[in-house]
Image (cartoon, rainbow, N blue to C red):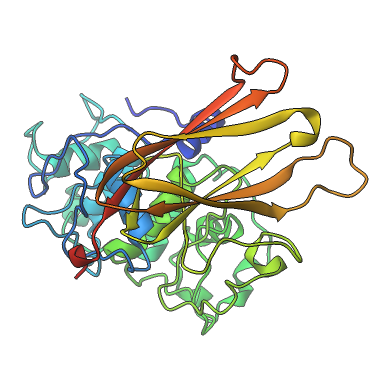
Amino acid sequence: MKKLISAAIILSLLAFALPGAALADNETDVTTLPAQLPFSDVELTHWAFTYIIQLYEAGITQGYPDGTFKPRGEMTRAEWALFLFRAADLTADADPEAEYEDLSNDPDDWRSEAAYAVMGLMDDFTPDGALIFRPGDPATREDVAVSLVKLLGTDWTEPQADTLDRFTDKDDISEGKQDYVAISVEMQIFEGDPEGTFRPKGTLNRQETAALLYRTFLADPGGDYGEENEDEDEENEGEGEENGYGENVHTPPDGAEILSEFGMNFLIEGSVGTVILEQNSSTGYAWHISISDEDIIERGSDYVIEEPEPGLVGAPSVMGWDFIGVSPGVATITFKLIRSWEPDDPVDEIEFQVTVVTAEVQG
């Protein structure tokens, strides 16, 4: 039987990178992350690079045998089912009540395993009374919205009556799917287009799907679920409140990669990666930092990104620590939270694994 996705499970999915699952027959089994970019068609400067790499590390996607990801490739229903199957660690019913006529009964067929695992989350079809899945059809935006809302267990909520009024094509949403789409918009899973349309019958490509899955399953708890727009204007990434770091404070250097404790981080040789953490040194707590190989990574500046809230005793600062990629290789940056009165007994420890690559690997 399919696993029940409770609130506790969803929180754990949001907080940790997930284990790998069964691989499709058109994908490469990669058990260890190489110290180089895994996909030849996804550059470090690609807008969805972080999302694609995190999904790769979590075992949700492994790419194609030719070493590509095909970021602009259209997402089929079978591929979307496979991504959901892996991301949520679902299991297929060993004895389903009904069988798809257009899928094999081979337990090693990834399309069948994924389709039966998401049965009830995605639509099926019964032309002439035969149950079919249509694995090769494109996954539409409304279908993706419905399946995610069902999976996350939020389909019991009732959306605001006017949520869909922002979309000029709201009447194009299929009957019975309007509430699901509205909930996905309220959860900021989907946002629609700048033109004011939702495009319910529109499709998603693989790079858009990577962003969607990353933000839904792998991003920090409390982060933005929202879909990524590859054409989004980036002019608001400067200093000030708009970038989320507060007013009149030091921000990470332009172009710095924000390092994540979940999975591998990549830096081009000579570029900067930044770790952002809270620190409350006024109460005797401070982060002590070590680098496993300083020939690969060296420490740069550290600074306050956001000062403590005025008048709040013991409030922490938001701090930034810069690290520079020196030469190709893999190194680990370890942060240990030390109390001044017990320096040998850390209360917390966080590791950031970083791969430094040469600029020539791009393209």
